[in-house]
Length: 97
Image: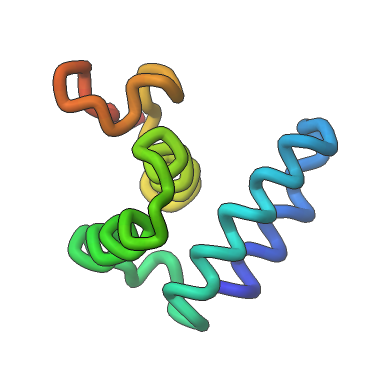
């Protein structure tokens, strides 16, 4: 996870400093949870466990959704409708590119 996260951050030359800061924060939490695991080896139940851990730390649903969506976009090619709808069961779920 750490090597992948470092490469990802280095590759994002198209985003502003605030976005990079947000990515770094989200990836820090992912690194803490997943350790040195290869992101390509993660399964849905692994990510579900991460979501549960984020809920315990009292992250709001939009923050949890944003972190999961960011990982999903990079890891699985998911494309959520909008950041505001991530995690909202009444809205369309993320779709695969």
